[in-house]
Image (cartoon, rainbow, N blue to C red; front, side):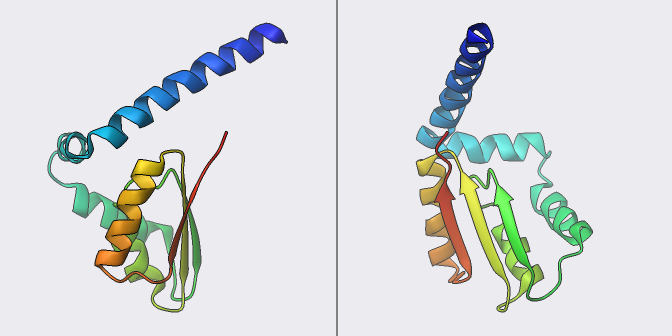
Length: 116
């Protein structure tokens, strides 16, 4: 049992390290998005949200929401009647998501930090 706890603690340290890195370097985070999706991030995100089959007024829980890159597509899907709640481990990522929400006036969005 103690060995398993230690393994989990080590895994958590690695996760914290990765999130901390991306939170400190948001421009690199944006660049990795372009590389990961070969410049098609908007198309892929839009299609993914459409495949979920959301309707106006739906409620969405986005886990590991990061800097809010899916917000635009989620907001379009659920409309003004809907609600989007995002959780993330990184406060810096949530700050970026909050700024994006404010910039585009996404009033239906709330963001919360996950505390392990």
